[in-house]
Amino acid sequence: MFEKQPCVYLLASCRNGTLYVGVTSSLVKRVWEHRNNVVEGFTKKYDVHRLVWYETHETMLSAISREKRLKKWKRAWKIRLIESDNPEWRDLYEDLL
Image (cartoon, rainbow, N blue to C red; front, side, top):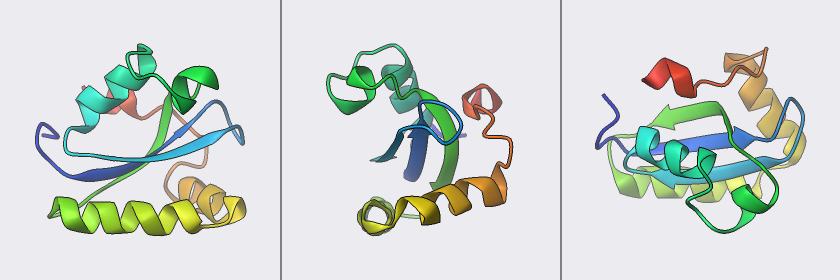
């Protein structure tokens, strides 16, 4: 389903933990890369691997635009966004498989 579907996503280290906002055209592949520390950088350094929210888009351009907006959001707004769809902060990665 998500093989070539533009998505914006939020990863967390744990409930109310460190957050990461990303964008991809292949959500399953990209989250797998984060979870397996294939990607050097922030998520590897801070152990941010739990997929807690994502949103699909029609085009990569709209996904990138949304990602840029979300990166400017206050932390509290991001937490409200996560909890509106995922109040338990479940790892949604398994649901994608």
